[in-house]
Image (cartoon, rainbow, N blue to C red):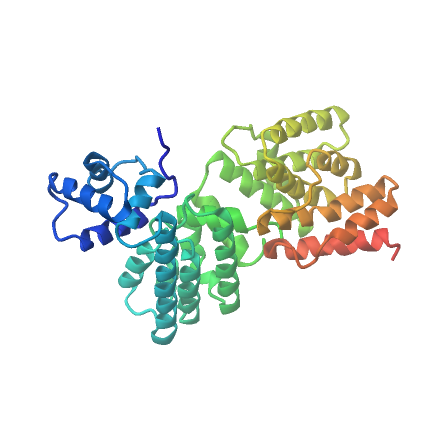
Length: 406
């Protein structure tokens, strides 16, 4: 049985159906008229689609996807070469419409919020949706429109898994940069700390050990008051522990939770990696405890993809380097593959790049100075995550000076 096309989202299919209906002199609300449509498609496209197949496409609201050949024939009947041709031309038109919208908002301002929400929700499945959203958000920031910005994470269908993580990550980066430069972040702490989507995509994805003072500290406190799942509690306590280390504060307030925490399968690999690294920190004088934690770390890494291993190891060795724990750094790095970034997306390339400075350090500590220098020279200072830039570049300078005998 032919497999349905999996990239047929509802919006594209509805546009195709509307164009077909508009081209006909009769209604498709009557079953008998699908015989007429079948004949028209045969005459225009040179192949037969049964009336029952056409009814499934036009009448049924189901999870079944039409086949590529079915969509090709329907598209040919209204003047397109194929389904792919229809998608391309529709995307170009939507892109033009989107550019027009952006220019209009830049010239005239945002105006009525309800209308903006409707327009945004209409375009959520477009591949360049975040270009439109980012433009609107930056206008809202320049207008100091707190009301609009406070509702941002309530948009339906936006901060969901149907969008690629990378597009959301860089949208959040631009949002935070804009809010920082405008001084608006303190006014939004209460909104973002309590909103479930903002808790995930802004707090858990963005707030890190590099930005744990000022309003980020306040944001984390509001988050902690309103999200108390095991994963959220681990995330919070580990970051507060790291903040204590970076600010020469006592770590004892956070250690009870960290020592007593029990692992569950619902905890993300990065908070778990942080947790294991802190436990290594705190038990470094106990070979048996270290061996047990390393075994648990190996078990965690066993279920991760290559990039997840690299990312988790990066967060662990960043923490271990602050002491530094040379042997532990080497053991953690051994669990993450040393791969190149060919064909990877920009976020993966960044993580592969950032971990190189700790690989260089580990090689140097093992007496492999030439290899360490070679690995250090592979590091690109321009390819560093903005939200941990200060941390990474500080470690880079320390390691570079060490290897080059400065």
